[in-house]
Image (cartoon, rainbow, N blue to C red; front, side):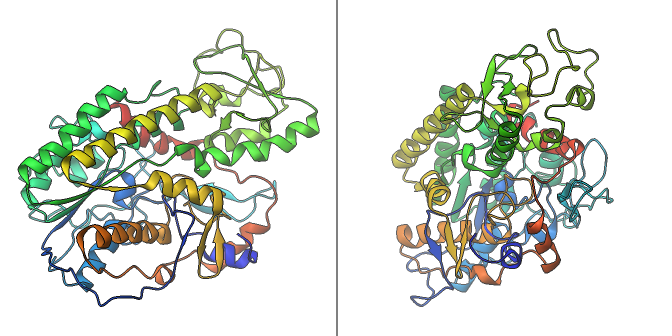
Length: 489
């Protein structure tokens, strides 16, 4: 952003990982709100953590109220929809628990500066919240399930529904007489309009784990079968429903992958050395070398923030944190970490050039399937792939500020570097609304993004810190769990 540090961090909780086509939004104005010739009595949202309103590695009410489905429902009501109460599976603050520690998994600013002069980001060790409306005597209208891959939509076994959060807290297998699949719960609600945004987790788990767990995205043929099955089943069960399907953004453009490398490159220059890193599948001696400035350089994931302080030191901290019973063959932690092929930057913290191609190819194949399925079924396509790429290239203008995809100061992503913030979800909602208006002859007013919350003023001080923030290794345990669900593990 190009404004003062204070303004930057006033907007940190704004905008998002899913955001705009390099364009801009302003306060709503235009035609008189109207649904045109459409009758809308029920809107249902299908998706993953992005649909659920996940922020900063947690699901918690003060963020969920700004989920894009909830914001869309409010604007529909303004246009004349008789939705009644749009119900979501709220979790009281501070939100969902980390399955390892039992404490709230939500990332917060723990301190503005550490001993090293950088902000510390991670869970605060607070007791978690709990579901607040689990007694609702019908399925929720927001059926976004964190961690769910495409296979989870028709699943009735719970294999792909992120137990216990998805299966128990959202689909409520154990606390209500509801169908076991997302598909069946949607049909039970008999919606007039549906937003369908699944598929990102079929590649994101591969990418965020550095191509380690899972070791490949969902096969293209499997994705094609499952996507066609999902949309065809919806149209057969709900022949009059209006469906908007969203495609998958380029995961390589989010702060989770674009933050660490640019921060490490100057350190390498000081050392006068290159980074040795493990390529896909390597567990011992590394064959990769990079200055992190060349074309096609590997991307270092946000999980690597913890280990940047060990560069050049004879350290085996990575192996201790991951509880290796013994060092892998070929590893010697008396060598300088990251600067020697026998003590390299780990594969799990790296998306190398080949892995980037694998992820990009999967996204292209998935998006081709989504477009063809939409065209053949009469569904409407929401093109977030093009949208995000434009934002990454050009930034996003909002209320006189330029937002970018940079971590923290860019203002588009929450603290986990993957999920949107409140204003970001508002922007996503507006993109859906624009598509609905254009495709269905409606005049649903846009969300006024400037009314959505930003970060509180004291956190503006973070912008004065030098160097990369510090995120403890333990902070990523729940994050890892979230995306392991992509492979049904």
